[in-house]
Amino acid sequence: MAELTHEPAEGAKSAGTPEPLTREVFLPLWRETLAASPELAAKPEIFSSDEAAEKLFRIAERLTANARRFNLTSILAPRDIAEKHLADSLVPLSILLDCGLPLGEDLGEPYTVLDVGTGAGFPLLPWAAVLPDDPEILSFTGLDATGKKLAHVRESAEYAGLRTVRTVQGRAEDCARKPGMREAFDLVTARAVAPLPVLAELCAPFVKPGGFFAALKSVPQTEEDGELGAARPAFKKLGLGGQSSGPEIFRFALPNGDPRSLVLCKKRGLTPREYPRRWAEITKRPIV
Image 1 (cartoon, rainbow, N blue to C red):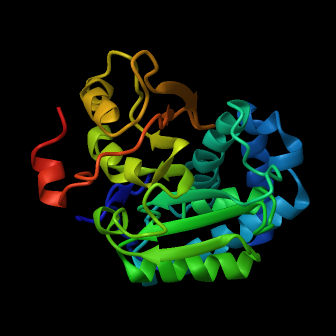
Image 2 (tube, helix red, strand yellow):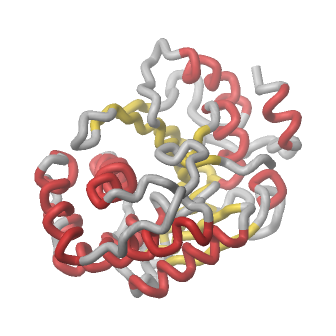
């Protein structure tokens, strides 16, 4: 599988060593970001606590320190970290909570979340930072083909004191066939730059029937959008949605005005065993 590139970075590389990030710089910017994000400001008990702010600062600090060493991203200005990495990850979480997904609820067993192509750890790390840090309630798994990026995720999780995070190295199309991975997760996310039909084929096999696939997209999605329209046959063949229930689309904007979309689809049935196909087939012959 060609490496999935995350939305904000879009292949960008860090050109130099950035200045170390300090609490004195980050915390006021984060408070401004919260105030400018209605979806986050509406849930202060989750997003505005001092504990959450400290964990998010530590994640941001590690991102700044490791960006060049692990080739993570060039988006490293403190305000951009607050908006284009953290808010970009957390606003979709707020929307998912509004949809009733039981993230953070005690269900008697962990609610399992897989982040496909996790890269630098977004949305994985911010979600783990603001939700209950209890492995009996939540389990976050970051999947990526690149070991050095997963090393950064593990280092960041340890530095921020996140006990619910683990990582798996491998290609999505290979890992989706492994016991303990296929149809094993309540929620599967992807924040990668890839067309929806490709993301759906890579992610749907990991979702339990009754679970959800959530794609975080920088390109605004509409019912008439070409990308979403092209993905509908894939959704049906992969067990996502149903006869009359397609994906739900939620639109929002970052504090700087950049548009974003969250595409959410429930899994109604098992994914046929022939999916996912090899990477070359997925990209050359999308499901129609």
